[in-house]
Length: 437
Image (cartoon, rainbow, N blue to C red; front, side, top):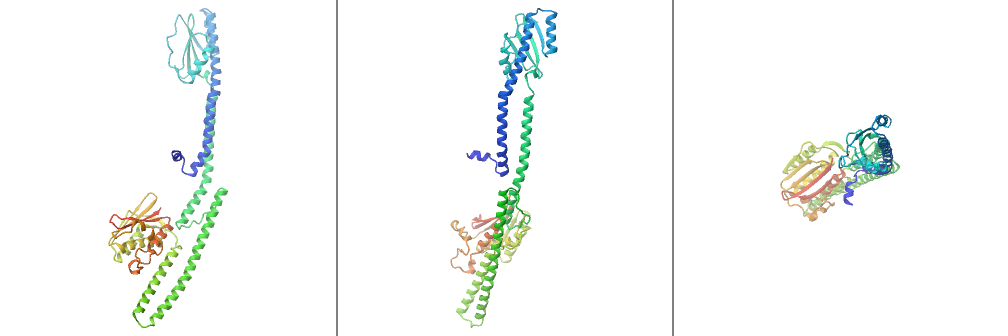
């Protein structure tokens, strides 16, 4: 069953074409088989019986007429009227054994039908050339050789039939390919629109087309897209209000603290407020997800160079290796922010960072390696959860608030890609970013 699935076409177009053409092919095979077995065999037998009857008549003429003008006249009449070139060789004998090994349908029909009309020993040779057949009959006085046209054993209807059925099949194939192509095109456009929407690329000219079911799927996609965009807009507006209210309260607290006399408890309170501000900013940045930015054509190599340069200015040792230009359609600020989070995370825990970008057949892969302590394999998925930190102290100075990797994966997934963690060759952590082309 598994082997059969491998032989089936993978595309909807190929499978639909197979569903249309397979019955036609099977009908053609069955029709051709029964035609050959019944019609062609029956027609060939009747034509061979006619030829055998003519040869039997010549045998009677030779046997009943002694050598002379009358026999020669009869043989001439046979050559002129029934297209049989007959010659009598007096005193000769047929060679022992057949002239050639019987093969093919012609020999089969001759061997089966000639004995029904010819009672004397005979041999035949259907391979002397492509136009004639030689039949030799052993008579008491000698050998009668008859050269008959090969076309007397065939009917041209077989070639007409095969040409007609083949032509009709090819015509049906062309019509099926044309109409199936027109039905598959809307499905491909729907798949392209859904994939582009998942990557944040706006598809402006998409309209439902095709069959009723395809239109239903396209309308469902459009309604889903509108709901998602509406939810994103509502969330962004709500978070903007929350951001304004929280920042207002924090500003009031900072003003009240500024008017108080300095003390140890007051310094701790200031640190707590600063931490709250950073946490609020981080949470709002995570919730917004850079959803409003439009995707544009850019060179990912340039973005990586900017990210590496920014990390170097902050004192990180970053080594960048890019395999030429990497043209893609991405949201520039979003992908830059995701890569910045990953590079800064690597620089925070390692002394050296290696960034490498390579273009594959269907995606661009960016690896970010460090020589830090790494992350245990059982916790590599957990670090992508919001506010999860391996450092239980939640000290902002030592590890942030636990949203860097979460934001990075969220932004990369918004482009249709993925971020996975693995062991780096240097012993630290490897972050592999895969972005589809």
